[in-house]
Structure formats: structure tokens, C-alpha cells
Image (cartoon, rainbow, N blue to C red; front, side, top):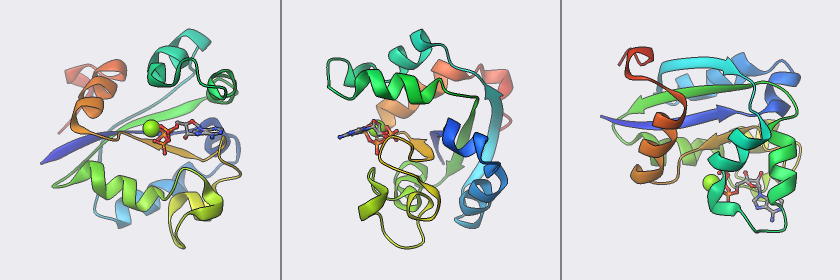
Length: 138
Ligand code: ATP
Ligand code: MG
């Protein structure tokens, strides 16, 4: 079994579509084994997206990720990281495949509804960023 870190971004929580996004996740066979709603500070968001520090869109990501609450989740499946990236769809919803979460719900490239880890190393870092072991039911 593999785990990945998912975030339902402020554009999702503000539009009341947490359940709809979770339906996509569960229908794809990904199991939600941890979940909580939190509010990120600019420091949290900047540290989480540290790989993008210095890029022109970095201040905007921090602004969008702190615009409202987020739901952070740990998802589990045999190939969770790739399986979730597949149903999320492309970063830019304008070019995302039909039926993906971003094609269905995202507003724009910077309000693209969900985050998913992109490698086993980032999944480990990102899960540890948000969760203690006792918060993950497995
Ligand atoms: P995420 O890390 O949120 O799952 P991703 O892995 O598909 O998204 P990244 O390249 O890691 O894409 O970019 C992180 C986030 O930064 C994207 O989700 C998007 O909101 C924003 N972003 C990326 N590229 C751009 C861009 N060219 N213009 C504006 N925002 C961007
Ligand atoms: Mg990414």
C-alpha cells in the first residue's frame, strides 16, 4: 500500500464542494485514512510550497492557499500517488482531461481545487508536515 497527501484548496472549501471532491477520490478506489480542516498561515504555505520559492507565481500561491480553510488528507491505495495525480488532472484546468477533478471543478491554474504529492519523497515530507502517526487510522 502507498500513501499520498491531498489538499482540498480554499477554492474548494469556499464553494462547498468538499463532499463532491471526496466522491471523486473514493470512486477512484483511494481510501481517505486521515482528514482535517485547518487554516494555513503564509509561513505554513510558503514552507509547504518551498520548491516554488523564487518563481514569479510564488506570492500568489501563498495568497490563494491562505484565502480560507483547507482540508488536508492522507489517501491510501496500491499506487496512491500516481492514481491521485491521474484523477486530479493537469495543473492548468484548461488542458485537464475530461472527468478529472480539476477539469470538473477548478476555476483557474491558481485556484485548481486540489493538491497531490508528486513523488514518494514528497508524499512522506508532506504527510509528516500535517499529520502525527496517531491521526492516521491506516
Ligand atoms: P500542486 O503541487 O498544487 O498539486 P501541481 O503539482 O500540479 O500542483 P506545481 O508545478 O507543483 O503543480 O505548482 C504548484 C501550484 O502552483 C499549482 O497547483 C498552481 O496552483 C500554481 N502554479 C503552478 N504553475 C503556475 C503558473 N504558471 N502560474 C500560476 N500558478 C501556477
Ligand atoms: Mg506540485
